[in-house]
Length: 513
Image (cartoon, rainbow, N blue to C red; front, side, top):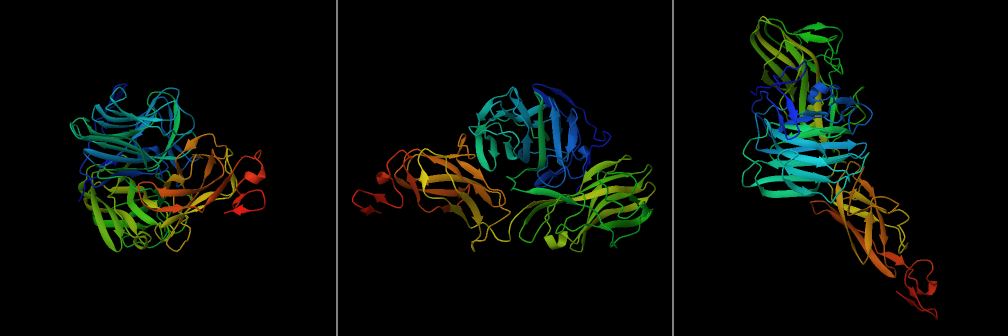
């Protein structure tokens, strides 16, 4: 059974921290790991779900991507790091959704992987919205700078990959599933990564973070992390001493008003968990349906033990009628702990229980609160099959497109996939087509990211008297869709006889089609 370490609360983690421009020093104890190293959506409502490194990170309820909470790092040196249960890893794939209110005044470190006192890889946000990846710390060798730029007040998915090797190291950055920086055969050193750090480091900037996952074997799919807590009911195990009012482990943030404590001997206590198929007060509006994909699930506990214990404490999860106990080394003060990360079915998830199991005498095991957190990918019950590209025709050369112009994700039965948030690459047939981010046609783009299965298209064609088509293809995949032909007319100051509207009119009444 895995041995889990606590998340920081009252500085329980033996942390030795100091920060300097060229690097970062961390010292703490961790243990063996699985594929998913750590996941957090801030859904405990407490910054102690992660570990504060510098400054004063906050929990936000105003700028949130999913659930009810997100992390806010607001300052010139305000950051937090993951509290994953791993000693170290030579490969790190971080998925973090990031939202910032303004571009930085100077290039700003926003994510950094570290190995003890040494920066392994660094990602910076530049003053123009581009990203720069570096080997080592902020003073390290530049791997590349993105041509893609990020804009304020928008949620972006940032994937930051680091492979440690003195000869075949890799650093890669993706924005909304699209590779924007990549470097291979790099010398990224030989020291394994011990943490990933999130937040502005070099200048004041307000950045929000949500739905973070760290993985050691590959990129993590899109997802939203939402939470459920215990509900009133009759659990399978019910032998601990209760304090307060049922449910005893359902406070957010955690407090000691309601809790349950073990008794001497061998005894267990669980509580029923609220269904993810329905909403739960205090935990946002999202629910998980039969067509959604469950990526990962973890139980986070706020718990402690008394002094003079003789015996063992276990975090218990009961899923699908099967108990899983995870040995835990508890502190005598409240601290946050993560259980093992698993992938249950929705049916089992909606009938699960969670709690603890104590075997021994003396110091008693107390659970104050717990949260079941699930990273899931919304869907509509069927996989993406193709895109429907709907366009208005005709359009006029030299004018930003008008009418309804959209890309819609559909399944094989032409049903709209309302949970689709894929990114599509745009191409065309014809000449002189430029795509733009909005209806002002001022900022060009080659991609759109769907929201609720749909994205608007904005484009302008420089030359008229032609037919064009527009194609959308899923980024890094093959699903695609192409529009019908679009008629492009000349500007309005050109005589009607030479315009193309369903065919070319020539004098004498003949229509060429």
